[in-house]
Length: 127
Image 1: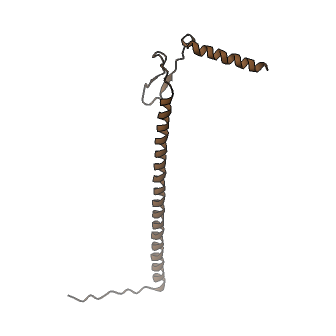
Image 2: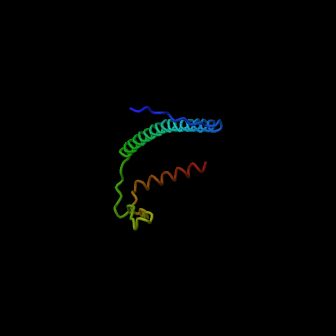
Image 3: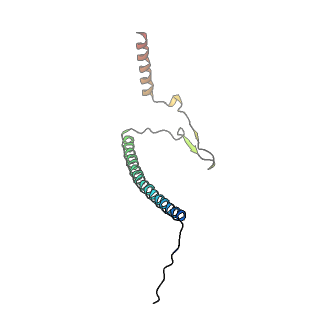
């Protein structure tokens, strides 16, 4: 094996100071990058926890809505009165057509209840 002779360079004082400054500024930049990366990791974990909490809340809300829907009675609406939705084009918004129930099809029990309530309101209004 041959002996290797190290090569020495002579740097002036200003060059050595500049090199030290560059080295220290690079080290400082790397430490700042590490600090930012750790902060990002912490924020990312918090974000994932919040998303998980939101997902759980949405599931609970969905379950509560299905339970609520199961409690309410369903009204059979004739097919010619139901709302019709049709999509003409993917770029156009959904257009909804609403048909109202004619008064002659309204249940007589509801009519009598409405009249009773109106009479009560008139009686309260007189006093």
